Length: 425
Figure 1: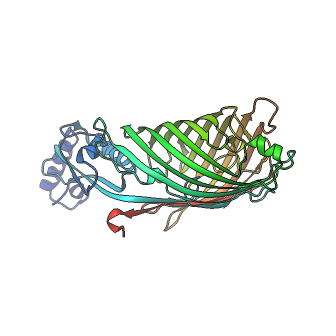
Figure 2: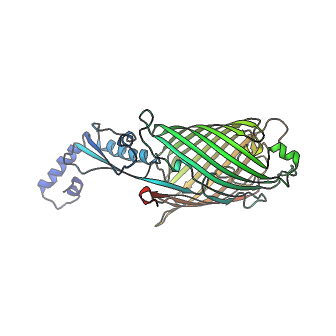
Figure 3: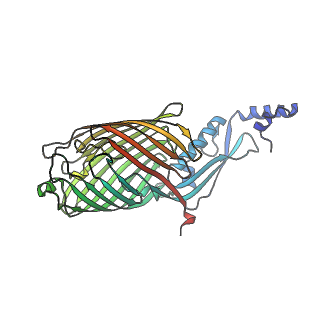
């Protein structure tokens, strides 16, 4: 079949064919009616659920430009659900230039993730250039990686999942607080359910249990009581949250917004303590020029006065104050702002290389005189990121920063690995 674009691109064609191309182009510039939406590849997700995440509907009239834009928006909308590891939305060749048939192809899969985060496979060391020893090893599956959508409640999809992980952590003695060094191991399990009001807004509830084992032989008894250390402590947690996510690219976002609001109720079974946590976390992206992007993050958090030391707001770590700041780092109330500038330096056969510069600033407050950790922290630095795009997304980060604490070096390998459910053993 000869398409209008191929006819127009052929300068040696007869006048009759050229006239036909002009007529077809003129006709296609008008309204296009979506005649049918064909959905294929779904085995576990209802067709109505998939169609509900599309930004167009059968029978809708659009211009060619609007149709192209809505196809791209629908593909991103379906990709962001985490129900599918591959989504293709396309317009099939037309027999009638005024009628379009849209094909939505989905591949349902099981999504594995490794890299940065408290519930992913993680091996790392915070503050590598500093004196703090904070070696941790974590293994787990995040609930979002086991998410399948169906028409469940009120005709909207629900995501279910689980989390299982283990973490070993060691903290050096805090300056000015003798006997405050400690080691801990945490076994964690959780279950979570999220309800999608729309492709971009979800609310959920989670239940977590963590059994924390502390080695307190080198910790002063008074300090152990102060920061809530026990040999064996069972912690149960209920979390309620609202997430809003509007990114233009699930794998390499350059424009969009993410906002999360969380409220947690935490109970420590051994010492019958109870405290409430709340967090507001917002991330937004914006292009600044040719291949230059900015990533900005704002965080605000609050902890009740009964919160033990190890659950206070800590501004260090991944996406936090990227240098060693053992003091002035934690508190019951915290504000944090970070901005990054990233530029596409080189495109490789397997991905692209991006240099980045960043600035972090944070402030925590601690009421009363019992703890002396609240204060102001900041960091500035630069780094390199090697990004491998879809279908297997991996990002290697090497960043160095300095600021209110000891200069720090941060290295991480983050990524996603997809596997079709048909390939399960």
